[in-house]
Amino acid sequence: MDLAPVLDGFTVVLEPTNLLYCLIGVVVGMLVGVLPGLGPAATIAILLPITIGIEPVTAIIMLAGIFYGAQYGGTITSVLLKLPGEASSVVTVFDGHALARQGKAGTALGIAAIGSFVGGTVSIIALTFLAPLVAGFALDFGPPEYTALALLGILLVATVSSGSRLKAVVAACIGLLLATVGRDAFTGGERFTFGSLNLADGLDFVPIAMGLFGLGEILYNLEERHTAAQAPAKVANVWPSRKDLRQSSGAIGRGSVLGFVLGILPGGGATLSSLAAYAVEKKRSKTPERFGNGAVEGVAGPETANNAAATSSFIPLLTLGIPANATMAVIFGALLIQGVSPGPQLVTQEPELFWGVVNSMYIGNILLLIMSIPLVGLFVKILRVRPAILAPITVLITLIGVYTVNNSVFDIVLVIVFGVLGYLMKKIGFDPGPLLLAFVLGTLLEDSLRRSLLIFDGDATGFFTRPISGTLLVVFLLVALVPMIRAAMTRRPTAAQQNDTSKELV
Amino acid sequence: MTVLVGYVPTPEGDAAFAAALQEARRRGEPLVVLNSPRGGAPVSADVAPEDAVRRMHERAGADGIALDLRQNAHSGDAADEVLRVAQEVDASVIVIGLRRRSPVGKLLMGSSAQRILLDADRPVLAVKP
Image (cartoon, rainbow over all chains, first blue to last red; front, side, top):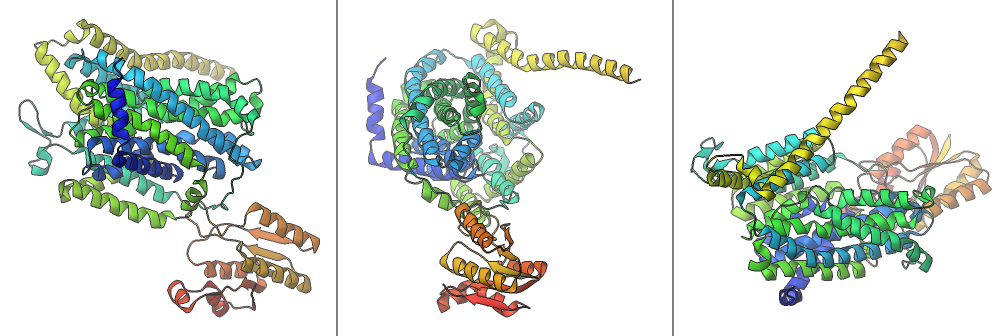
């Protein structure tokens, strides 16, 4: 492997501007990790307009910092206040808060910080070696392969995402539909524009992301009121004892690997991997009854895994141009705004951006490790701000921000429309993630589908004759059909059983 | 009839609690401690921490006084909450702590103590630390 671009990446990161934005990114990330409700996807969406004025590398360094910084911040509130600030630190509550109640809050936070650092670093090292390989492999991809990949990505996100699978697929279809709005790229015909000039260029990514995630989440959180306030918590002796460290070292190791692998898979990401790591630790432990009553491994495993996953989910984005989860979809949008199209060419064509972003994660993780513990008190103080004060400010920043992108009032209207849509979706149990992801991938899917059909002269069987696209499509069919078949298989015996019981009753 | 005290974990709140304890002993009535933070935020500095709660229970127990601690959050004005609970528990006296406020601060932020003193329909005992 050629090391020169990797080292050049470090010179990019160590530029003062980039260091500053890396710091800003991780601090903002920790903040939103602490605040319950406002997730990294929402924050990155709200901050998208800021990135327009700055260099692409700097912008992505900051946004990446927000993403993995949030994984650190979520721990603090989980442990101290039993309030998971982030979906990925929900499982930390079980053992982290139990430890805090025993007066070992410092130990839990220290272990979590060390685990997060190790998980993040292992993941970055693996990313450094694996990403160029994947990108090199993907250089051979043509339109048919991208069609299959985009299809698979959308389907996997829909199946793995939280909540009902059917609802996620419905949301993804709405996203695909929204992606078709505007002038057709091949024929120039207008689709779903209703004669409006504003819609002729298609829907912009920024207002949709800011509406669905930013405004939608703010509106949704306004409803949820914390009626039971808690007294501010105190933290003492952060350094875990040698015994705790020995106990959790295995969990940290397993969490790193598990998080890295699950982070790469589309739809996986930090939340899923922290859940999986907790389950693995509980299963492997000789004393599973300690879990839930303050087991150090129960904090170390999930916290390591969510950071490892947050880092490794950059691999599909930076090497294939396929975002693996909703937050990555927003970062994908940020790259597009900067005029950078993520894909296999990124490593060779823009080595500074690629390695700059990857290497910034080393620096960001060190910054987080240094800052996370001393700043705990400050972060807990921020929780004293009421949503009634926070929400209007955030909404105002969102609306001003979206206006500055194109100086267009229509975009503000779009944000409000999608904000209401996002709110309603969350309210009735739809995850807006698949919608945004399908919207982002929709353009790619349509372009590559039509390009490949041109190549194949309109013969759709061509997809199956090429080895890579054929394999991907078979996987697609498996993922789509296996749950249905399994559901059908299980439904029949239960139906039979029900008949039996009804007979017995008679 | 009960003795109602508005409590926050500050020197003023502790002084009010001590005075309320005496008052409850003198009158032979149970003590209601109202420690109500403003609702909305997940964390509030107004909530009595666990050790303060334990201390209050110990002190009331030592004097043989029944103590009822209410910590549910309120919306709107703290003074209204105190007056509402006073009505609810039929307090014979409301005990509050007074803190030093500058005239400008009082003009801008208002004063809960002043509102309780003026609006209460029963005796109010105001204590300074």
